[in-house]
Length: 275
Image 1: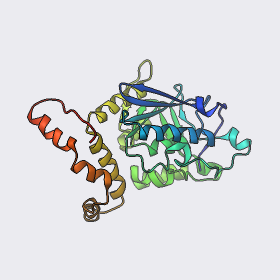
Image 2: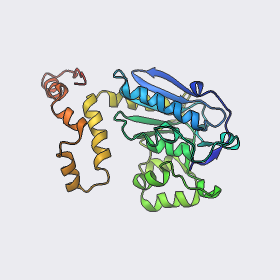
Image 3: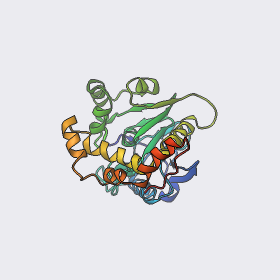
Image 4: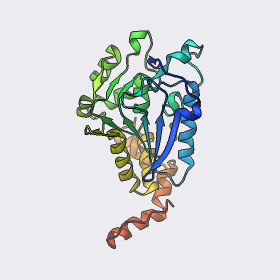
């Protein structure tokens, strides 16, 4: 499950703050002191992400934590002490609203602004890309408390790191800093130290880069990656050509697929319609 962490309580509606920056949705997990997640917060995060999925004006979401010490420390021990079971209902999106939200065809960037431990690390792994502050650290310490990181950590980490490195982290619970995570390719970008919110600012900038692409093409990339990630190249081609990938099929015959080459030939910025 998720490594436990003490956290102050806060109503779910206030625990997930929403703002739009430069056309990028920013969702901030705000549960002092450690941005830990209980069942209600998981539901709130899922509802925010579901609304993002259904909002045609939003193309990319960034997830971050309030403050500068914790991205998220995972499972909320206070909720557990109050009777919330390890296998509590976290909603359709799984723990933290995203770890089992498989049908989200819009990109999510995790802006890891501090410690991402247990379920917090699993939440970051469920995002498509990770931007981290230089002082950020990642760990899955579940074995030390008699559990395993079964909200995606034990499943996703071996696909994001060399298997031996992932196995070491899973079996020892040791911390991995942002620089090491970047060397292994786990983190896409490490934000330079500075005032304000470096990881969030860098993640929003990355989100704007993604949003400059054609909406259907971006969705098709996510769909193809999801549907072919466990396949060999030949099997992946077969899946790609099967006609069973709706986002990819829609992209092939879209107005945007004609607009892109036209804009290139006319030396202008494409005008995407998402159709």
